[in-house]
Image (cartoon, rainbow, N blue to C red; front, top):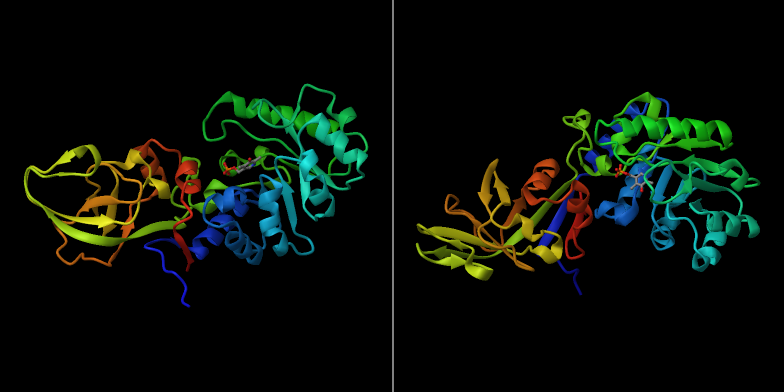
Length: 348
Ligand SMILES: *Cc1c(COP(=O)(O)O)cnc(C)c1O
């Protein structure tokens, strides 16, 4: 038996991941720098990302739910924290009570559930205006959390990637909460929040996007390195004669002869139809455009200028995150987390 080699792969740069974490840690000043590894490490692989960040010195990790927690729990060692951002449901209690991971309690019911069960150390999320998860900042938070042993009290910024007054408003609300509620540590900033400056850093930061090569704000450009490079194999090279069309609904019709490579990549892999007629592969710095629609499992690219490209070759997809986001109409987050299960994930 031999291991299956998929016709599409992600080249993942472990040095870039670590370099991004170090840059974020330095940018965060005296705050400890954690890592959001939810959604399977933003699509790259939570276990492999966590392993590398642990070696680099990261001690605080964040996942969404207890299913994700179970995948990385074997990596936990003394002094390493794993926080479960969605808190703890009734269904999660047996696992949560047996786990070294901590729930981030988000609702009064979760607080009561954890306290009544004598669950021990926990985190608490306070909502300072995003109106997503967390205890309402206008409530009697100190009374609500009475008796809890709070490791990290946190809140989350809604618009840290923009220059809006809402950031300072959330920050001020969080400072108020910090005065009123005792916790071992306080944490507010995601990737973009780290770039907002020291008032936002508190004791612990929680970057996700920028670890994986996303550029959350201009300040990160030139510092955050790309981590992910999707590559796909050429399944067929074919000739298009002027007047021929290509792909579903024949959205591209050749006005001259073309040489085309058909690649094993499609929207089922997260290469969504927004890239139809817009995406490209990169060879020696040159962009070779995607022609016609992206199919479920296939795309066609123009290789007229590249006589050497043939069946079995690997081509690198242009996936520079901010540009690919602008091109496709997807966010950088979607571009990462959408990367599908069919890629082999190969860490350098
Ligand atoms: C996802 C998430 C983060 C990380 O955000 P990025 O924008 O990816 O850096 C931090 N905190 C919370 C609560 C999150 O849900």
